[in-house]
Amino acid sequence: MSSFIIFSIDVFASLFIVVFGCLVLLVIYFYISDVTQAKQAIRRNYPVIGRFRYFFERQGEFFRQYFFAMDREEMPFNRADRSWVYRAAKNVDRTTAFGSTQSLETTGTVMFMNCAFPTLDEDALDPSAVTLGPYCPQPYVTKSLFNVSGMSFGALSKPAVRALSKGAKLAGCWMNTGEGGLSPYHLEGGADLVFQIGTAKYGVRDEHGNLSTEKLKAIAAHEQVKMFELKMSQGAKPGKGGMLPGKKVTAEIAAIRGIPEGHDSISPNGHIEIKAPADILDMVEKVRDTTGKPTGFKAVIGAYAWLETLFAEINRRGIESAPDFITIDSADGGTGAAPQPLMDSVGLPLRESLPLVVNMLEKHGLRERVKVIASGKLIVPSRVAWALALGADFVVSARGHMFALGCIQALQCNKDTCPTGITTHNERLQRGLDVEDKAQRVANYNKYIHYGAGLIAHSCGVFSARELSREHVRVVQENGLSEPLDKMYEHYQ
Image (cartoon, rainbow, N blue to C red; front, side, top):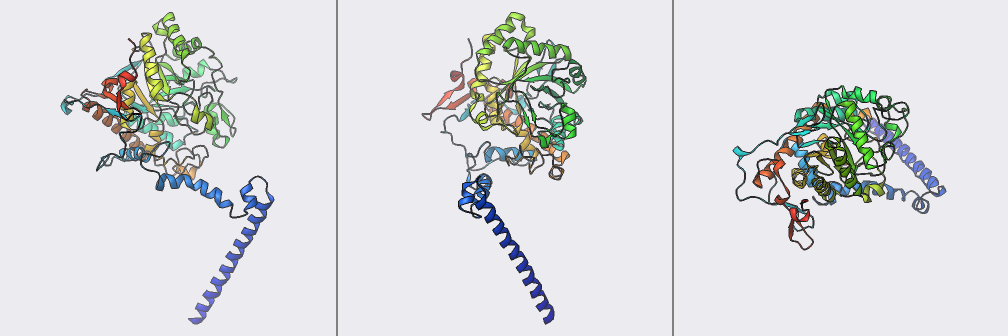
């Protein structure tokens, strides 16, 4: 027995010496590497220990997220909102206790005005149906308030697209394909689809990169494809096209998009066919005539004089020429990869652009003809109800549905290292995303968005969320007092 103990001690000592020696050699290697390189001053002046600076800088994001940030502080989405989405998606208790963590004195806080005589449960109604494209051979009629915004296959993984498609079908809402083309995984779940045409025309481009009517007809032949959306710009990067790193452009994605495999997929920053407002109408008409289905466009609103020209041109040509919908993306929209100057500082947020566009449509007599879709950080019922009150007919969300899939806001969408398998093509990481389970979570989330928006509407004394208007909302000003939304954004008279 004693000999065995002595032997074990000798083996342990030998292993310790080997490991310690390897560590010493590694430190020596790091030291030589640091003092001889010239790219990082910290490492050169403080070899080895200077490396910890970069390690702690990277880990700081996660420590702030989980330990230090208050429930309502974190960006881009705070813990309170993310927690609500997670609970709704899992279909567990969504109530809170002891009072709200949201300050009612902060400038910009939205407050809904409850009615002395709220709508009783037995009088509550489902949202009314809305028709998009009344002049199309195949108009689209839907009751869904809340839908899946554009996220491309490529930016998202295969199981993520499959789960969203199946979840959207269960929820009875539509799913936007994003600009990356129509994949089999979009079709798999059976959900209604909006096919997005980006500036690179992925999925509907000819060999020269121009819009192909033959491919448009092929996409429109799918009964699930209900509408087409021209993407002019998106919230996170107005003035910049889509960006998909080459390492995420697999053979399958390349075939669907019609681009070379393994190369960065960078869309142009604008449609070559569109140089003026009238060109938008020409392209909308071309797509609509080719497909027979409702067609509109998506844009971030910054400078807005062009909208006056666009709406005047519609009235000159005739109301049939109008886009069937306009998707208004907020300047605080998201994406997997965008230049920080554009992400931080370009475009109008939804609180300004949404009422501006709605008022301009009213001014030109087009409010009933052109439906308005709002997009941008609208992931909880109160924000969805707020957008409806401002004048939106529909709300779409990308990141809200990503949270429903299990996104933890790791901020690695652009690195192919997403730990939840949502935005990566690493098959090992994708295995963690169970399609059937996540599809049900997407449906649950959508259900409770509708339910929560309905609760707010009934408290305000109307029968459904679509009946909310600006008179039901007040917003806190700098002096701590609130201002009615209908006075802040007066309708066109």
